[in-house]
Length: 433
Image (tube, rainbow, N blue to C red):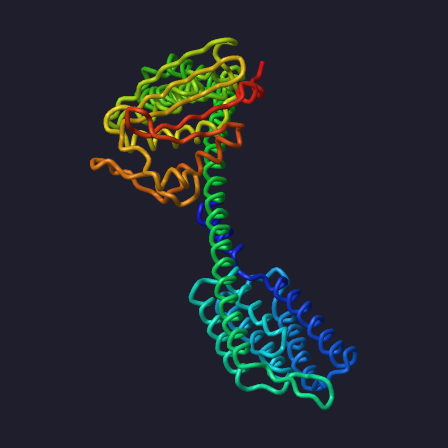
């Protein structure tokens, strides 16, 4: 699966699903019907039941149309969702118009479509639904039928309370909409960042799997290629001096030797070709992580210290390799001249500390470090590093999945410092004997 597919799936998860909208409308229809009947026949107030149920029936018919036109799993386009929510707002405003306007205590429910829009739509569409709601509230504040009340009595809402109700509804809509939008936006950012993490891990696992495929291919091709080589040598002895076939025989032998060299290299490069190579000592793991970053003009100093229990040996974990690789890459990108990688272990813990001599983390970044789409820190003037702010998030997510805890800080002598700590058993639990 391509990375764009992961992101598209995460982005689509923020659209309003038709099944969700239909269920919300069913609840609204039931709630409106029970309220009208309860007020009219339970409390005995003079409610225009026929007119109210005409609007409720209109909402029910529209709901049936949506159910027929779309599948239950369909996710609506923002423009379509905006139209539907705006119509819902107007339908509710019509009910309020016939039952007292803002004098009706249920008038606060006109905030609901705005909140739903804020949780699922882009800002410009939220503004449209909000403006429709504000306009509707303003109209029914001045123009509405009397509030259903006891027969022979007229309930008159004081003007100051009417203004207060208008302000309360509009401010509640705005506050709730802003909160719902921020929560939804952060959730979508997190979903997209997690999609990027899954893609990075899957890619690393695919690369690891290629090592095993290379070893398997080398093993399977070895026997037939050995037979071809023997036959080529025999043919060379018999036909090597023949002008008609000698050149072709020499070419066949040279190409078979070339194939043997290729297979030999595949076997040598494969880290999964032998079972015992699937287990990596910590020193080998660190070397595998830092090797791709040694050619960028930054010195990488490595120091190992192993106390009780000796050097940890664990199963090669694609998530750990990729996560540590991201952290080392960040350190190299922002370092002045030196990156230090220190490992420590005892019978309880394994710790890796990555420190650079760059400008360090800014105070603002330290408060949000590891969140998606947060750029790492201020760059060195000579650095060309860039990105979406996902590197640290991906590294943190992958390493935490392996049982690690991460601490980000600025080193005493300057520069950024990341400390990764595992329980020792988490590093060696998957090791093969």
